[in-house]
Length: 243
Ligand SMILES: C[S@@+](CC[C@H](N)C(=O)[O-])C[C@H]1O[C@@H](n2cnc3c(N)ncnc32)[C@H](O)[C@@H]1O
Image 1 (cartoon, protein in one colour):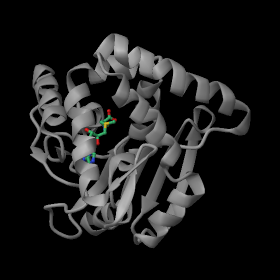
Image 2 (tube, rainbow, N blue to C red):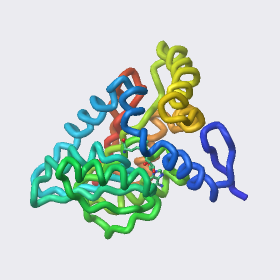
Image 3 (cartoon, protein in one colour):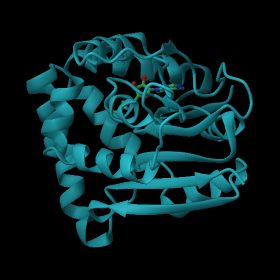
Image 4 (cartoon, protein in one colour):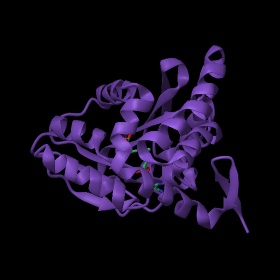
């Protein structure tokens, strides 16, 4: 049996996706309010910066992976205009349908598709931009997912990976206290679920740090990779170019 991690727990590799599904089934309806509370609104700034770095133009083809409740898809759709297309995808139906309803309430109609990032149902060299925000951390085979993201990009296309990362040393103590003491309590009070927010804190600690993820993206086929730390490394935006 091959094993992997689910937060700090060791689980059968074949079971991780089911555990992750349980987390997002549980938090979907409270996801947006929790995001604002937990990050004190900062996730909006991190995403706004990601949209800037995307530098999209009219007509671009975009794939939003692990798109969840649709923040990035919504922002991207405003940039690509009527001639472009943003495909909003996620492996989790509860997250995706919450996002789709939200987009519709804003008058935005996008193709919405349940799919696993590790097996993307798209042709080679199709998209100008692929994004994955706070999703890669939850995937079982990150190397396979990154290789798929590279495959579906056009040559010269860009992958944006926005993800929690390794904080700067002086912030570590306060960040640990906030993650392990405050987040689960907040999750319990607001979403009635402490465990999912404990998993969030643990999964961040298990995720590859900035240089490791950069190397993984290179191995997945990206010719040029760089990263931008935000909020002292709480979050990093990795940018990969398919050369
Ligand atoms: C923390 S949410 C991020 C949602 C959104 N991108 C955002 O930034 O607000 C993580 C998402 O990753 C999705 N996810 C986890 N594993 C996945 C996989 N293998 N393929 C596609 N999506 C996945 C989850 O279902 C969940 O909706």
